[in-house]
Length: 79
Image 1 (cartoon, rainbow, N blue to C red):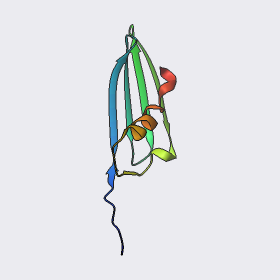
Image 2: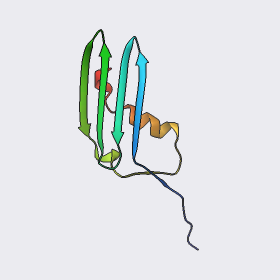
Image 3: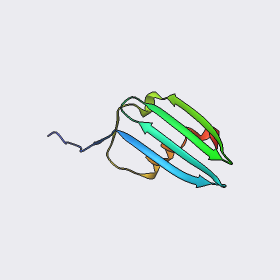
């Protein structure tokens, strides 16, 4: 007997938030594995970007806090 699992391919994710009076924006492309992060405070902009193989070709069964926590690690160097 073959059990089939239903997985969802996640193709991207964008997140914007405010922390300690700074505005942050993060963007993830889960097809290519690229991410981009920026912050704004007092007219000054900081940016970082990169590529992570663990963010490439993402398939998940559940959108849960473990997955979200993994995403938040990328781009945190500007916080």
